[in-house]
Image 1 (cartoon, rainbow, N blue to C red):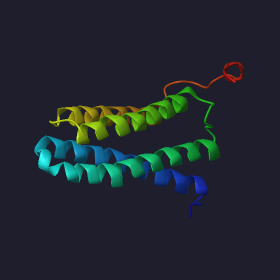
Image 2 (cartoon, rainbow, N blue to C red):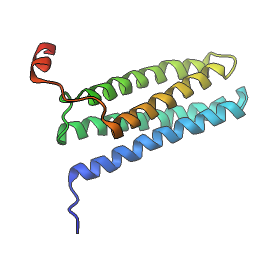
Image 3 (tube, rainbow, N blue to C red):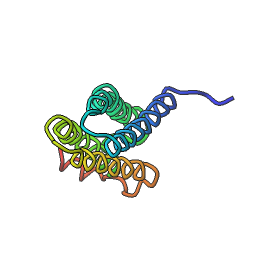
Image 4 (cartoon, helix red, strand yellow):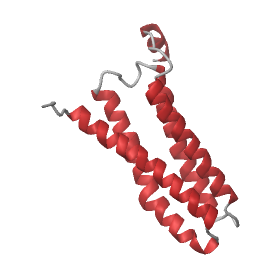
Length: 145
């Protein structure tokens, strides 16, 4: 029988919420393609009650994994890149899509924002699997501090 550790539980929660984030973006993109302005309320509900909490939980669990796991938050370039992408993505989502849902007369800007979000999420998932960049040396970390 395998031992279930707190890291494994946090990892399961993190992966689940990352894919929930991706799924929510796909659903919102499909709704934006298929709907007209009358269904903006459904997109706003998905944005406020699903997309925003899922993205916050996924970032929080990712940072928790970095702290409790062997990777660390500032030991590897790929973790810092993922963190920066996620933070910028959360900021972009809250500005771009909210403005597109409330102000924009058409769905083109919300579709563009959602497709950009989907692309960036898939890039972060790919970075997680590939771990393309190496370790940050101590001298580089000390220079940054």
